[in-house]
Image 1 (cartoon, rainbow, N blue to C red):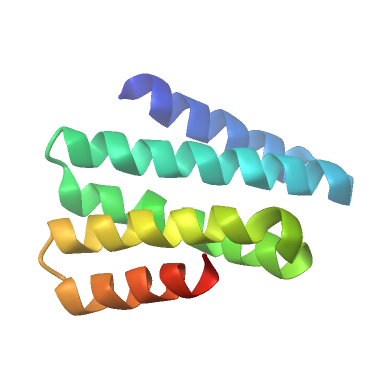
Image 2 (cartoon, one colour):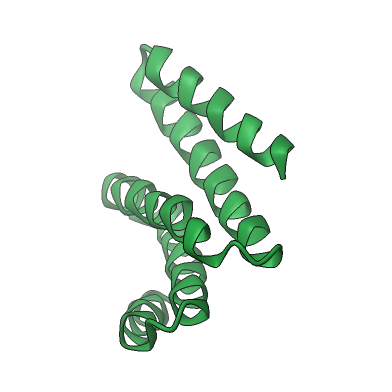
Length: 108
C-alpha cells in the first residue's frame, strides 16, 4: 500500500512541475492510473471510505483527458467510472454507484 501512495505522491510532483501540455497529458494519464490502483488497494484492505477520494480524483482527471481527446481516453473514463461505482457500492452509496455504472456503460 505504501508504495502505491508514494507513487501517487511522486506523480503529483511531476504533474505540478511539468511545463508542456504533452507531458501534462502523459503525466495526468499516469496519475489517474496510479490513483485508480491506490483506490483499489485501499478497498482491498478494508479502507473503503479512504478509497473514494483517489478514485474520485481519477475520474476527474479522466474526464478532462477524455474531453481533450475522446478517442484516446473515453475507455479510461469508462473504467474509472466503473471503479467509482464499485467503491461507492462498497460504502453503501448504491444510488450514486448506479449512476457511475450507468455513465460507464453509456461510454462503452
